[in-house]
Image 1 (cartoon, helix red, strand yellow):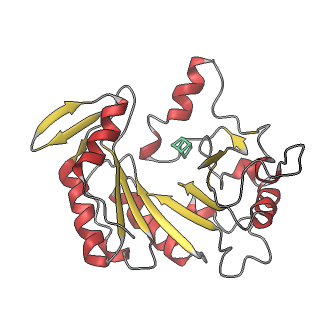
Image 2 (image 1 turned 60 degrees about the vertical axis):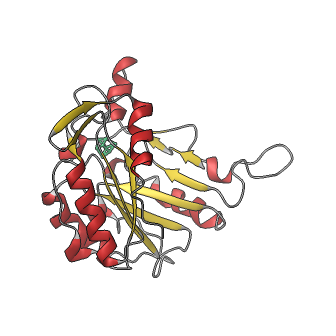
Length: 238
Ligand code: SF4
């Protein structure tokens, strides 16, 4: 697994952004997170070692733009070059998580067609409001692979109108960090039930720092958030 942050900084756009970890981390070094800047890692996918080998070897999954949003308007001028690098590294699997699926087509390469086979766009859906606005756009986007992440899951969400094998996977998780909002296990199980009914893979990634189960609230450390989700054993394999 590799991380590629071609640009850094973002603007809060929806309810899931309230406690954004990018803002939280930047605050510690008094950095203005709302300024979107190209990073030194911009060319990482095509960067090579002295011996001429790619620094990111073939076969890796590359989580893309985790300290910004790949489709943010401030990066419109840089995205065509990013797409060119993504196309060049056809043996990498790029996962692009976004809250801006409405901007997916801005700056799309002319040869995109039905989608590059090495690109997965994962749309964030944190509540019912965003499910209603983003899911139809995700399904309409020409993509070879699309997925959904409900994190931070803020309420019970019914994704069933949009779930079909056209969605590769749904991931659920709570919110981390100080002031985290509660995630109720009943919401997670409900999403899992919807995925099982639609034949869609499901992954319970983490409980979040404030986890509610059977009406009781648990405050969990970061390692516990991950381990408790894994222990639940409720994933559905692809
Ligand atoms: S879209 Fe993502 S990176 Fe941008 S402010 Fe919201 S949570 Fe943070």
